[in-house]
Length: 440
Image (cartoon, rainbow, N blue to C red; front, side, top):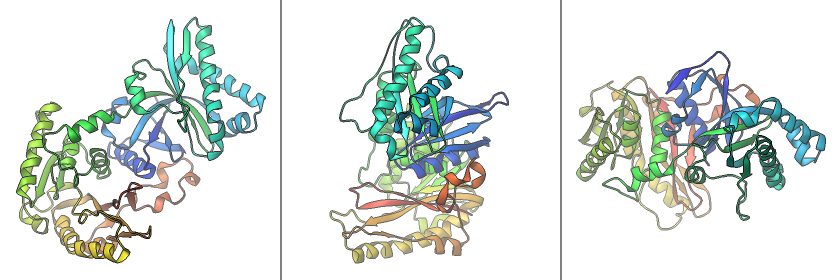
């Protein structure tokens, strides 16, 4: 996955998904469990710049659920210079930006030369809303610079435009895939943070079609109750799952979490009290083994009740538990706060009994990542379960995945170090997910 390079650090920019905190937590966990030395510098709600003394293989994007694109940084500019150039329309600052690109040989590092013909894209990412009004001007500025450089090299070059109704000048991951821009080394990322702006070459892009295949393409689906494969992969990574580890899902349903853990080369075990789900999981896992050529993959799926987990699974035999228990009944309308609290109260005995059993089967320092319901009420407030007190009473430690040691500038992380759970809920969803990370 990762191979050692020279002592000089490489810098990569990770374009994060909509739930940026969850995406960032997954990335940190993924790199940590693989013992990759890294530091996060330029950080915003849409991207994170990661410096590493190891070359990161572009294929690692297939192992991440919350990263949209990965780019390799070829040039950096002070953010103030970018502000002067475009917010204050300072011509000297614009000249400085071009000079910086030339000094760093950005064109040579991004686009393959020599070329006879080249079509490339430029995507902008920034946190400050101040850049919104001039974002298309910035995109044209960057695109024009590289176009002129290519023409000077004798190539016929043009850069891609965007539909007028598009809010931001960004190519989607689907567009990058369909136009083959990774293979052509032809997407440029311009990422503007608080202190630095970076130019990067896109080296990998998230493939939504693979997740779609593992969802609707598998033999058995259960649409209403299934966790999305993308989120399942994120949770598997948050558990510090790695090849060879034993991962358990005690509420496995049709096996979505087990599938993503199997792709991570874990030894997977599932359990469900519904015989139909046990059979469905086995069917889906067999399909996955054949579809992805996982001949040596090991799994077992048991029929059983999570409140008697230790009668089916040996104590201290599991490295990771990743699971989504019952989130309550499907809701046709937004409930009152009283009704929502009633749902949560009815579910507490199930969760609390499970905690006791999960603690028994986890190895020392093993992690558990689980979902609890997060219900939006008629008034717009939210009702959650609040499991921390019970988890600590059982013996679990609440994990906060963001540590200051991983950030070059601690002023960037604000309250991230206090984050102990993550909310995943769509605007129209009545019941969302609160994702917790616990350690034995």
